[in-house]
Length: 98
Image 1 (cartoon, rainbow, N blue to C red):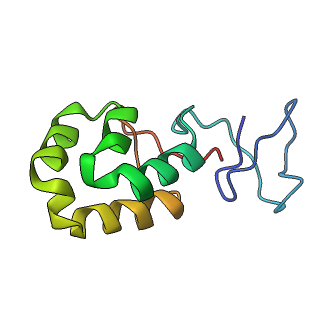
Image 2: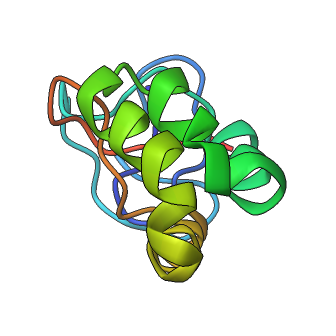
């Protein structure tokens, strides 16, 4: 289970996050994919769309590969979105887990 506010992994079934104090609710919208891996892939190989392939977004991964990451603009935007924890995987789940 992960905190929906700070993304910290929690053990057991606490009612509040020990890190930020947010009230916890069972959230099925958090992806098991790593935000760190997504961010690093976006930074170093984003122009090839590797982070998109990692998230299961094959179509946009191919588009990024063909356009070299939208000439870098798409890559920078994806990196910022990944670092802030607002990127989603193929099923629409947020990438929160570091």
